[in-house]
Image 1 (cartoon, rainbow, N blue to C red):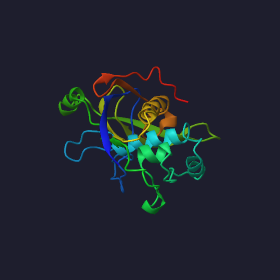
Image 2: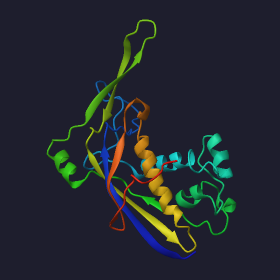
Image 3: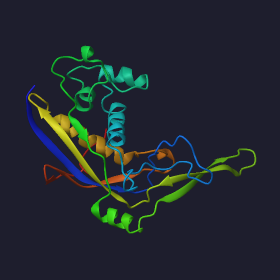
Length: 228
């Protein structure tokens, strides 16, 4: 397969509500944070892993617009990503197949979408370094259905609403690729805006909006993108 182009998609991810992407602590110290967020091990600044963004993008597309593909439909009903490995499958083509190499059809090629970690923008990194961007703690509870009172409060660390991160993706274009492949990515971003990223999306966490989107330096808008 001949690589013919690499398209660059850039923009800003602005949090509209607090974001929680867990760090996966194995233990909690006495008085420590029950559910801390993931942070850069050197700077301790919060960031959004590229795997979280790409996984959410794929999941939303597969459970909505890619369901007409037989392989995707079968995988989704089993709670798995598509692994059909077929060249005509948009999920396997854009994101890479979870199938073994022997199962993939010739010509499928490597994953088209490369998602970078989303780091704090320069403005918000300066705020973080100067102590003007503290993380917030949201306490979540379980409601006792008989007593009607909150029980078992647990602290949840979140990046505060309004914080901005950089969006940076690369999209490989191979000879023979359909133009609509890149449009699926924009549709996925629109779906993320309608949904959420990170944990606790159904409880108000992780609502985002994409701003200043550009493809190869040219502005694009999600306003005209139909999600479904």
